[in-house]
Picture 1 (cartoon, rainbow, N blue to C red):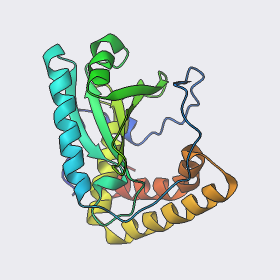
Picture 2 (cartoon, rainbow, N blue to C red; picture 1 turned 90 degrees about the horizontal axis):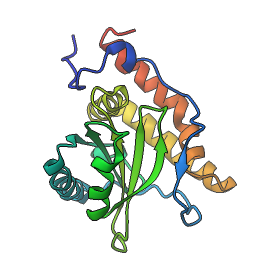
Picture 3 (cartoon, rainbow, N blue to C red; picture 1 turned 120 degrees about the vertical axis):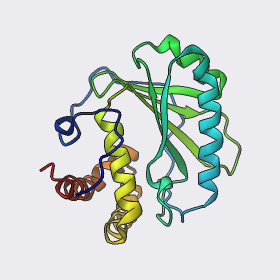
Length: 213
């Protein structure tokens, strides 16, 4: 039997049900044209860069009471796995819809709001503004308490840290998908869509191992 997952009380039924809704209220800040999708070898320095960013975020949000938790997620959190040089962070706040409680503080800490998806777990995404040349970027994903998506991110990260075969399959589809997307000029959304079948297969293995499906 697998150990229980620390998922801030997200219900198992919610964790195993993917919310694939297309959000008609999605909002994005104007950005520069998308660059080619780059997959690079794992850099051990990513761990320290996450720790520094997490320290800044915690310090910015703790005084207001908005801070609920923070996790290192995504491919850069998995030692040995090639990844886009972008640190992915999952941030839990008390109420993602109450943007005045955290958006200004994150802006002062150097992160700007780039995407809002109210019907997809109240997701907001921030990107690091004016990052130093040659340093990895940062995608800060904001969700509310007991969010199933945050639980899935943790499960996926921990599974690939521990299972070399599945990590290898994910590495392969990442490189293939990046090459295919770059060849036709797709954005990262197209790249993610190309990976989805393999990602869902890995999630099925996770859920099956825990007796959830």
